[in-house]
Structure formats: structure tokens, C-alpha cells
Image 1 (cartoon, one colour):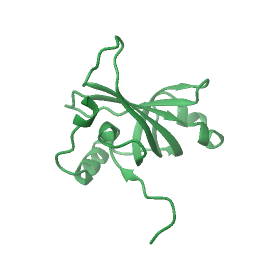
Image 2 (cartoon, helix red, strand yellow):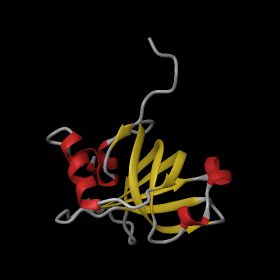
Image 3 (cartoon, one colour):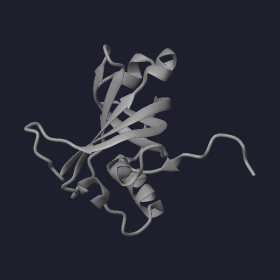
Length: 140
């Protein structure tokens, strides 16, 4: 029996809505924006052919001391290990939109991705994810 922290689940950012609040996850995302006021990093990773858009709002306050400018620069790819804190469909007009979802997470570790092959990464992670993964939990 292990008494250490539980392992994170490696997944695509776009599959975060299929997880549960409290799940520990590891994912890769592209920096869209960073708020110095709130300490929240907005990340996206759009998969070709997917109509669903997911934004991860990652609270980085716990890891601020280790963040460099390269990890918060728009367009940079970063790896995140953290906990899901909220999952919600989002829209600009208050209506529910099943094509856009915002997932909030608390980062416990964040680092630059460095050079990598994005399509190969996507294929590798998709091969690991269980078949039939859906986002229907978000719509309820």
C-alpha cells in the first residue's frame, strides 16, 4: 500500500472535461494568456477535426517562484501537473454551449515543453485514452 501522493492521469487538454473535480492530471497546453493579478494561466490545445473547444484556466500561484517568463509567454507550450477544481460549459452570453468548456485546475508543477512533435504527442496520448471517452458529463 502506497502512502505517497497519487499518480497523475496523462491526458489531452481537450479530454479534461471527462475528468472529475479532484482528479490529478498531467497535460500539455499552449499559453493563450496570463493574468498577473489572479495568477491564472489560460491554456488551449485544439485537436484538428474536433468541434469542441476546451480552455484550461490554470491557477499557478503555488508554483510562481519556479515560473520563468518562457512559461507564461503567449504561444509557448507547457506541461502541467495539477488538480481539476471546476468544469463548466462557458459562453459569452450566459447560454450553455456544449462546444466550449472551461476547466479550472490548480497547478502543482509546471514546466516548458521544449521542442516536440505535436502530432506524434497527440497520437500517443489518444492511444492511451480509453475508447468511448465522451464529454457528456459536462452537458448535465
